Length: 168
Image: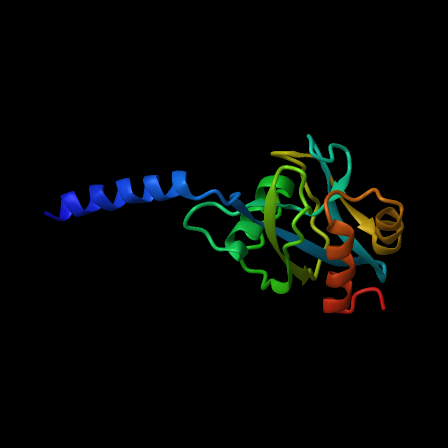
C-alpha cells in the first residue's frame, strides 16, 4: 500500500510539473573571502573558465545541489574551484540576490557568504575556474567599477565589504 502511495505521489508530481507554466528558479551560493598581506586587504577571485561571462572575475560559487544548504554549497564550491577547505571557517551571510535578470541562463537566486581569513592560503584553480588568485581589494573595486566582474558580483563585493568592514 505504501508503495502504491509513493508511485501515485510521484506521478502526481510529474503531472503537476508539466501543468505548471512558471519558469524554474535555480539556487546558487557564492563565497567572498578576504585576507590581509602586509596590512593590505585582498579578496579571492576566480576567472570564469566558460560562458556565461567567460574570462570575467567572479567569486567561488555555483549551484546548490539537492539535499544541500546554500552554506554547504558555498564551502563545497570553494574547495572545487580554489582548493581552499573552509570546513572550520565560520561564514557570515552577506545577502540574498534575486534580481530576475542577474544570470543570462535563467532565473537564479543566489546566497552570498563572507569571511575574513587569518592567513592567505594559496588557491589552486580547478573545476570551472580558469584561474584563482588573491587580488588587492582596491584593484578588485576598480575591476568591479570597470565592468570586469561576472553577473552581479560587483554588487556582492560592495555588500561584503560593508558586512565585514574590510578596507575601511
